[in-house]
Image (cartoon, rainbow, N blue to C red; front, side, top):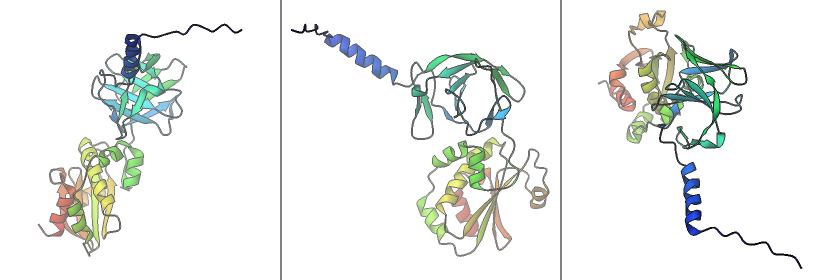
Length: 269
């Protein structure tokens, strides 16, 4: 006759504590604000660009999160402690809106410290590889919205945060003239990083219309023949033309609601 094993009973209070601890482990770590896409930096391992690397930044406490297929685990680069930490992948949560949270107990182990140089941050990881974060190269000359998004993935995130006026878009779709909106920008420019995604969202909303968007990247200093010819002395600037004739232009001060700015120019205001 088999001997039955004693049944281990857990008190209600113990069960409640277990459930509470499991729930807490799924909570966002309050030490970090949500990490937002930060596309201004390029990551390399042993001086080789990490394809598909995503860099995020949390305002508090000032930390970068790096993840890529070439990394065994996501990395936390904490500016306040100057340490690189390996993260448990299951503790890095996508929020569904482009941002990322670290859950409690996300850090697996320290991967090394880092040094901050003039233009880059470098670290020798615990596996011997040399990690570097440094500014992206500038986008120059003719570009498209897709190329800009591919260069800096934070543009796509910011574009999704902007809801253009459907009423304004409907009016713009009724435009019968062939319209060109040529946008001069700098991929290094923080103001452009704010306004260009909004213009891109408007462009997406006008797909199939008579309005075409062009993007032209300028270097710092704006020392470019076309920029000089067109009188571009700041960025961003959107120049609206019909049949090669300029109807009007708007700089950052006039691009707060870009779809309305286009309507004003096309109406002759």
